[in-house]
Length: 103
Image (cartoon, rainbow, N blue to C red; front, side, top):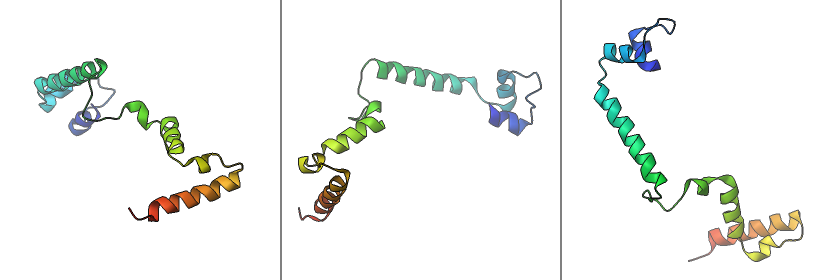
């Protein structure tokens, strides 16, 4: 609502409802109703357990999940390094080998 109020120069202290501002701006209510209906339908679709064009879930992008996946993808020799210094050396070596190895 900030946009139409700013364009029409309607003060926030003026006792104008959002509906009156939208009517004055010429925004059709049916468009807003369509957007609301689609958002609601999408939420119910997702809540029902349907897959949305991807194999990833929202939790898969969380740092703890991504960090664990990256760690588990490392070779066991890197993961079982006895010290931080050895881990860094092995990690660097493994990353270089995976980047520059011929397929």
